[in-house]
Length: 340
Image 1 (tube, rainbow, N blue to C red):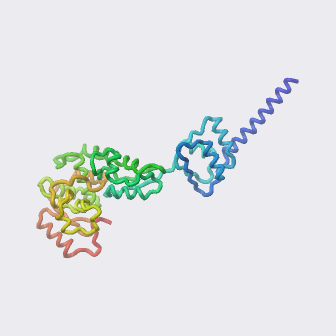
Image 2: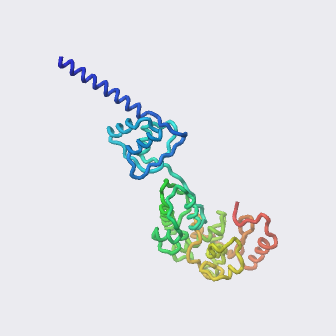
Image 3: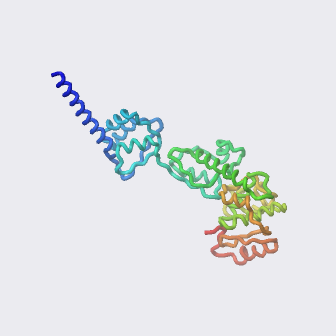
């Protein structure tokens, strides 16, 4: 009799366990009820699975929180990571748990093109709503926050496309770009050409920024670098408009005048000899490569042809003829200083 009762009891518990396991499996394989085909869930820092499950049930995404809670407890799971998660139609409760545990958060991208200034980078960053912003952040503040030993950290940020998660800070992205530029510049400097007029990698970075602002044509970078390097070697002034424009800052309205070329400024390369004190933009790797491997030749001048390219001259007389031809007498109606 006792044996029969024991067997009946064991059978009852086995059946009950089977039913419970089936209920649990069905609960974990249930699909989420999403309001749209794609749903974004933000998990705040400090959230735990029980809190999140209750919120999802309240929002109607989960019909029952208990399968998720019990499954996580039985399997010692449920350590979730904060962030922004994207869910697609057809995802199950188990898919939800695995995604939250793996930290498979949603990433965004931002692109910083070659030749932009740090100020322009900051405007791009400030326009992104999913970033954490630092009120009043400017170039000097960036330099101080990142420990850059310069009052003007211009040029120290590698142009590229960077991924970030919602809530990342502007400074975290700028720090990555700064670190990348340091590595990139050091590597390219090691393989530089001989007899260059630079005393440090930083001076090469300054030159690269000027090259970047002078041309967007890949085939001209090394030729323009060659002109500037030869001018430095001969003790000639660089006489490049982009440095003057940079020195004018917000006072530049788009029209460079003679008075600007005569005005005193550490960036006015029509008046100073050598390089300006800092880069004037953030150059790409190709511009740095050109600064470190300038084209050989005799050209000391160049002028924009108006089609996006430049005419190079070996002497002043030839250069003056080119200026009359391309800038004065036959200036194109569709004139442009950069390539399409």
